[in-house]
Length: 40
Image (cartoon, rainbow, N blue to C red):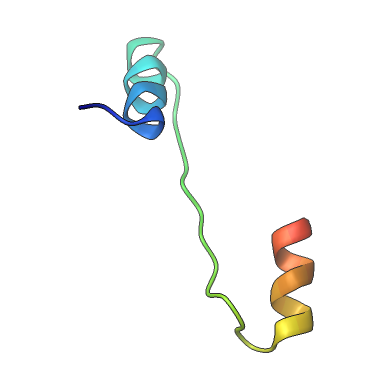
């Protein structure tokens, strides 16, 4: 089973394009800041 991310990464690799996966920690450093980061 492939995921949407797996398919995207394979497509980018086939096209010779770079990829970056980012993440953030929920509630770090505080709720309001985390919410602002998520919406950015």
